[in-house]
Image (cartoon, rainbow, N blue to C red; front, top):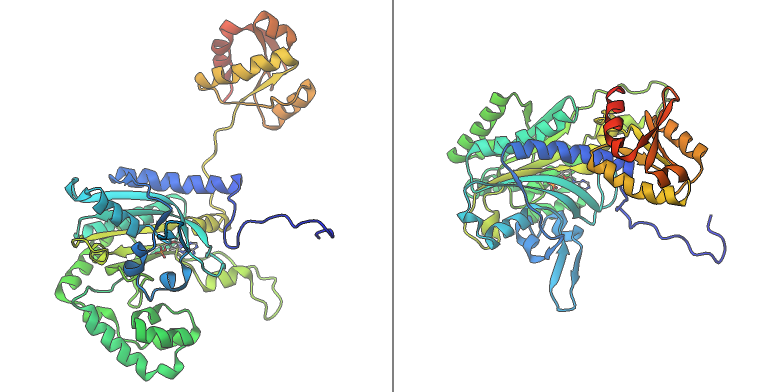
Length: 449
Ligand code: AMP
């Protein structure tokens, strides 16, 4: 409780959170795994600003998309520019492609990125206002093999992290030639059901009926079951492209299911759209009272997409440039971290220091301050507690971190240029002259597996 007259401590803004060291280990594991995979496939990293001209997102994402309508963080600069915190990664990469003349680079241009994105959403499970994504883009290629490669890279990342039961949900939403006829049919269908639509979908019907397919309200989900499906309206080009993508997925043994109503939140998508889920088969605790729903059950009832993406052949045109076929996708880092913890997926072991450096007295502390770096130059992993001065306390810490060797520097050793090397397992110690230290220490460590 806050005491009277005392100011409440400032907390992080709603929907934005700290990632503490224990969490960062999951973050690192995910990004390291993803990086290794995509670099193997020839992707290079790009970093774009966190802030862009708001206009960059307005048309490509769609004036009627949720992100543009209510979730963008925008602000005016003192110079009068309207800027936005980036809500997604793809539009900025397209901008960079045009701005840096990447059309003259060897095609396709394969890029990846990692970083924070911002959407003013209602914070809830798996939804934050600042969240991180790892994403890939293949620019300048219309071959379905690129759609399949984007999916494969994200799928393999999840697989390598230890996820099981991964399922790719995939659909084709056609292109500018064949989609209008479908949209018309969809509008006709929903117009007849107008009274049953939720308030938001009544508006969506006028603006973009395909967004109704993404509504999470129970009545709208029910209505969707009978709605016309895009697959019936695909032109020959889109049909062939979709079939091609699926064939590559078959070839690679990637599990997928056709989700005929899958659409994505932004207008820039065409043809392939996909989302990747982990299907849950974790046992549910039995000891619940009647009518009570286990938190795990709730989570299972509404699986959330860990990754998503698709093709965006019209995006460059929406930005005012020449058409550029492109495809890609992104992994929601927080969501994957959350699932890794929930499913107790193991992290790769972090190398533990086997050596602990102990110092007693001011001269020894100075010597140790420098010795630490000499040990680093020799690639010897060392832990220390330089701010402590007491031998017993430091030996206790060394034992706690299970160090196998302690290096002890006292006043005498600092003066004569030596170090005491103590075998922590056997309790035996010997004095080693500085010149011989690394040689003797390395030999000792070899005996300690
Ligand atoms: P999108 O950029 O909307 O295509 O989303 C790609 C992935 O980013 C999703 O599959 C989620 O895993 C993740 N994601 C999107 N929005 C959020 C959010 N508000 N909070 C956390 N993760 C998100």
